[in-house]
Structures are given as C-alpha cells and as structure tokens.
Image (cartoon, rainbow, N blue to C red; front, top):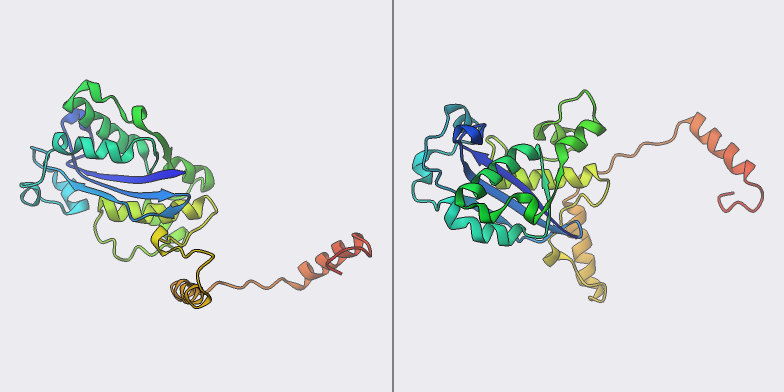
Length: 233
C-alpha cells in the first residue's frame, strides 16, 4: 500500500483570487513505513506573497526568485504521486490549489482525482475529537508527536509530522522506521540486537497504568465464571 502525505504552502488563501503554490512537500509510506523517497519543491509563483501568508511560512519572493515554475515541475510531481493514496490535512485547501495549478498548465492534466484518492485527516480528527481543536499542532500535542522544531509552517516538515499523527490516529505503527533500516529476520543475532537497542533508545518511556483493586476483583470474577478449564486461572 503506497501512501503519500502531502502539504503545500501558498501565496495566500484562495486560488480564485490568483494565489499560487510556492512549496510542495511529500513523504512516502509503503505498508505504513517511511521509505525516505520524499518529494520537495519550492516554486516561483510569479506574484507577490500576502503578508499574512509570509508570516505563517516565512518564505519570501527573493528566496523563490530562482526556483522553477509549477509548469516546469508538474511532470515529476505527477509521476511521483500517481496511483498513491494522498493523506492531507484539510484536503480541500491543498487539492484546490493543486487543481488550480494543473488547470493553468493545461486542462489535459486533469485534476488530483485523476491520479489519486485522498484521505482528509481533518475530517477524521473532527469525528474522533468532536468539539476540540484539530489543527496539526493540536493533534501533535494529543498524540505526543514532537513538533518543537516547528516555529514556522513548512510543507515537508508538516508532512513528516502529519505522517506520524496519521499513524497514531489509525492505531497502527507509530515509530517511523525507514525501510532501509528494516533488518531481515534471517540476519545475524548481533545485528538484530543492535537494531532493537537503537529503536528502543529512541522511544519515549511507556506509561504503565496498573489496574485498580476493583478492576482486579472484576477480572477475577470474570475468570471464575469461565470455569476450571480457563487458561488464565
């Protein structure tokens, strides 16, 4: 299963007002493992950047002056994301901008739906956490994802954070190991031990929640009702 976690930065809030994409950041997961096959591109928008947007991401027109235009990058970008399942936080925003850019290049490029299916993690979060803040910072706090390096928004950094948040939200593997770090089960014992020690040293200490007396009593009563053949007796 190939999934692409995607984020963009833009010159403003609405492509209908002529705003453009200035940064695309993607990280690839295959079978819920990061592969290291990322896509990251800054883009020259041929227009000014709103002050409010610049305050969010810190990207300046001067920095983008020598960057390629979307039309120059579109081939590699579409080839990278084609056939994957896109994971995006507030997908209508990013998808709307990408569709706008594709249309500017040429209608023959179609829309995002031509190439990918999309999962919106904001929709997921609102169902799981109704009535709460569900922006990326709030979700990082909820799932104890370290975002202390996020002084400003950045497409690639935000994609990396969202990948970890998504894995927590979907209840699966949440330690993002590169596939190249995965050792074969047939490897030698010392190599396997070193890998386990390396992974363990990077993990936070697990919180241990002991059962209360009432929970222990309920458990014992439940086991007793299962009869003498119960394996937990």
